[in-house]
Structure formats: structure tokens, C-alpha cells
Image (cartoon, rainbow, N blue to C red):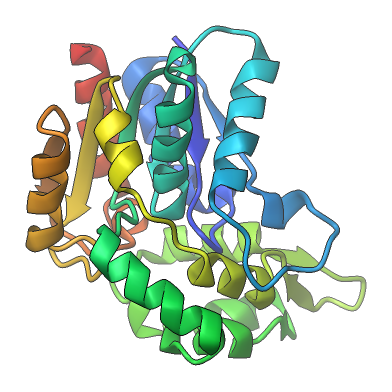
Length: 262
């Protein structure tokens, strides 16, 4: 059995160390980690880039491993990219565990895209990405900065330090710089795809683990998912959109149980 993890926008794979360690221990199988394009490309971020590009990268990664189809565990954008990839290449996927994935209905996607095309930097989440600090005096300074942010309020110190270590590059003078730039983060936010067709096409076993207080995947959107593809299983856990960082062991347990069952 092959396991591959697909990370969220702005969160390099090692940010999820606790989740991936727990998942590997639960299933007695190592978990491969896929780095999305913003972490490996030397090119500047474009204004828009279709998420099908990330899906193509996942397809190429799984094909290149030459170990048969994979169980794909993904978070947020990483989970949505897996859905796009599985719809195109079902032969490469044993199943998907999507941790609070970004799934946008067509109506909402259409108006968001129109707005972004006319004013790509106007949306609040894009503004925040572009304005985020890229340099800190030290890892400790970065940790202190993030510790004060509401988005990380339910993330443990251990997991937060994993994010700081994974998400920043140490410099010779002791400072650290952001790995996943705000420009790439903004590009991903601007380029959120329509998901209806891909969701409908997914035929492999699929589980969505949603955060009960997620601002990305609410009850209305989960009902829409079930209407699109009734075969998709849905489970909710206490937490928000950063569920796999807030409750990594619980997410690992849910994923492992689903994978064992299939």
C-alpha cells in the first residue's frame, strides 16, 4: 500500500509531522510527501494559475513513483488538487482522504472568478497573503509572531514550531525567510477552481473529514457534496479549517480507519 500526502496552500509537508507520524504508525506504512509547485519552482508567482496544474504535478509524481496506485491524503488545496487528479486519472488512486478540502460550488466560483479577474488583489484573503511578513530575526521571533495569530489559536506549540521549521529557511545571519511566498499564496487563492465536474467523476473510495467550525467547508457545502456524489463519505471532527494541525492524531485515526476498511 502506498500513501502520499498533499499539503495545503502555504503549509509545507513537514508542518504536518505529527499527523504523518501518527498516520504511519496507525497503518505501519511510510507516508510520502508531495511538495507543490510553489515550494520547488524558481519562477515568480503568476497572478493566476489553474489548480489543474497542481493536479498534473500529482499525477506525474504518482506515475514517477512506479509503485501502483496511491492512497492520497490531502489538506485544503492539496485535497482539492487530489480530487481534480483522481477525476482525470482514476487508475492512479486507490482512494482519497480529504481533510477540510476547498470545494466551491459553481455559482460561488463563477462570481468570485469574475470579481478576481477585474480586481485580483481586492479580496481580503489575497491582501493578507501579499502583506504577510517574509523575514524574521529568528525561529523564535517567527514562533512568537504566529503564536499571537487567531488562526493558530487551537494549534499546539509543538505543531506550530513544526510549521515554523518547515515553512522558513534559516539564513547565515540567524534570520529566517518564508519558503512559500505570499505571492504564490495569493496566486492560489485567486485561482480556486470549479469542482462540480471532478467531484461527480471521482469513483475511488473518498472520505471528507471536515472541521466542525471550518469557515471553508460548512454544513451547506457538505450537503452539496453529498448531492453531487453520494458515494463520498463525510465525517466531522472538532476543529476549524486547520483541522489536521489542530487535531492531528484524530485526523490520522479517521484516515487510517477508512483506509483499512477499503
